Image (cartoon, rainbow over all chains, first blue to last red; front, side, top):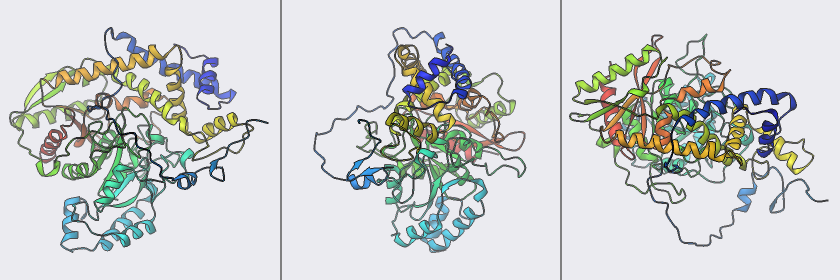
Length: 95
Length: 472
């Protein structure tokens, strides 16, 4: 499938990555070539094949639902680009 | 040169032939003499001295051994960047399971090694911190070390440490090990915890080891494997004493040689080395069985749907809010997200996020992502069927020797083809090791890959050790 300019802009928006106008054409060409290349999977008959999402050989374990009240917010906030008191700070979203 | 294997060094430390401080003088000097390789993102002599002062000896074989850590593992004592601008100032508040295990055994961290950004690449040319140079390059023509764990491979090959951690999602340990002429093992998916490893594609990511010989790689593998309740895919299995149990008597074993790995267009030097390894095994009493893994050619396209899909989801966390880089030019919250991710991620990472978003988007999910998961099942079945006929599989590791920096950069798919022989095992979750075996016409090392059943790392250590001893 060819990925046109509008599709590139749409998936860039979904990905929250700003793309400049002069980059759209080259990117669309690259994405199209990758998508066309992976489309060779259409040659494979996958009727009645179960999708494989987890190759882990072990059964996913269950654990007890125990509250963990360890407060490490100070440590975690150390990496915040912007913070206010004990919170992450972001640009204002409501006037 | 002395001090190139763990066993020898551990022995000398134990017998007090050398003090731990003298040992690190040697390794710091080696590192300082090789800064042009750009193998480390973080290397700080002071940090090494701090570890030495605080070091309390253990009886473990890894006691006092210099190890390099791929900068994808979270470490409390050193920054963790994943080779990305978006994490350039990140300081992890916790230690990864794998690095904690190494610390518990008395290992000393030389530093954090360079890699492809978020482990996305096959030449170590996507790092925000610059390219890594293969230590086997000639002065006028720098070669890639392979990727994504290129810094770890280069550091081990240049003897700047005695072992290194890596991560392998589609070949990121085995391919650079092959390019740098060292041993690299990706164990079974689930053998090592992913806790504290910066996520790329969670259903494929696996920690592993680089070392200068098979024995050391087995020792280190024992050192980092083990159950961790913090990783829901971590396997609760006994970790054998791989190193002690190495047995090079292979008589009566059967090796599978998959015809599909005889890919058209690969250089003759690769096939020659492959044939040579087959002959060696035959001389050791191994039965040769020609096998078929019919879906091999679909492994790469399957991988390039699944890995970007998982990456697009995993990398959604980098939003400039909780940690890492934030753009300064925004006019709104949405704008801040978009600019932060535009400026913080490199080209290849953005490309993969976009592809991943596309294949997961409404209307395309079934056609791409679900289809890829089904083909992944067929690839896993191929291996399952093959292991009914053989004990292990032998293939080349890479379709070429190390190539010059700058090659294959014009077309992403050309770069992706580097992983043609390593990706199938990743999709199936089985263990694989690459060991140096033979040379290219230009005198560069070539690697041979051994694959075995889930959790049968011992078999590939045994065979790797046999081939290492019989590599002339």
